[in-house]
Length: 310
Image (cartoon, rainbow, N blue to C red; front, side):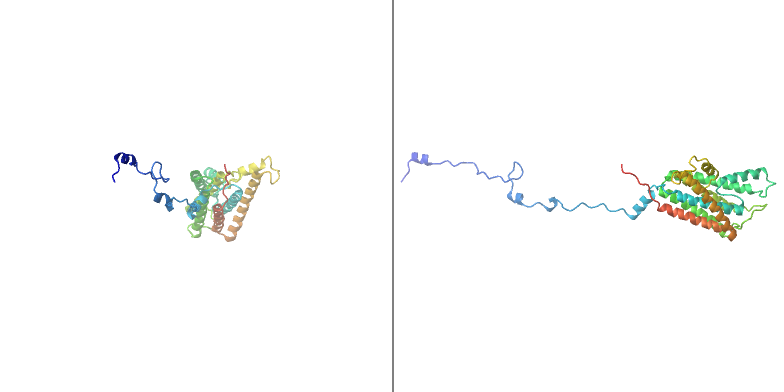
């Protein structure tokens, strides 16, 4: 049965031509996300790390040693080490004077000997004694020049500077003792005569040079009241001190000067007894070198200056 055309037109329904909308899944803005990508787990690399950061490795032994040697030492109780140097000065000076009639530390006496040698060359019992005094004064001044400039360049309170300085002094004392011990220089006492053995200039020059390192070290650490090689000015400072009679804890500089005087005197007495007992001058020199070696070792472990936090 045929359907009328009018009815057929009314019953025709126009279907929409647009595509069905697909619901957007959260993803990038403006673009429909993909379920597979949005639901996939994050890669392991993007997950937050819960492990602590790597700690800084501890310094190596070499780095600790460098930091230890580069530290500035404290001057607290450093006067003890320079009092030992005063003992060494008395010990060595008394020994050398007994053997050669000159000093290697107390240059005031050498200056007098130098003047007497030039003014009274015929009437003195040591016609060539002035040459020994001149050698001692010259080597002492050279030592002051070199030790002072080296100390300023390396750092006057740095541990490595003090260790190097006193180690060099120790080696020089041992070298002088070895020269005498080996027989290259006469080590007998009372060898002063009208003639001169020019080989004796070797221990005189060495010991005078090393003694300069002591006074340079005391000045570098602001311990000028213990010069270790000077007595005249030290006695003046003791006698003219306005706080001479103050208590022990009230005048530290006076205490240091008095102790330095006694240390030099005890060293001189010790050198005289040892030299007379052994009749050789190298024994007191070995003892002096051993004491100075102890001072050198003490500087290696001396406390460093504590810097207050800013």
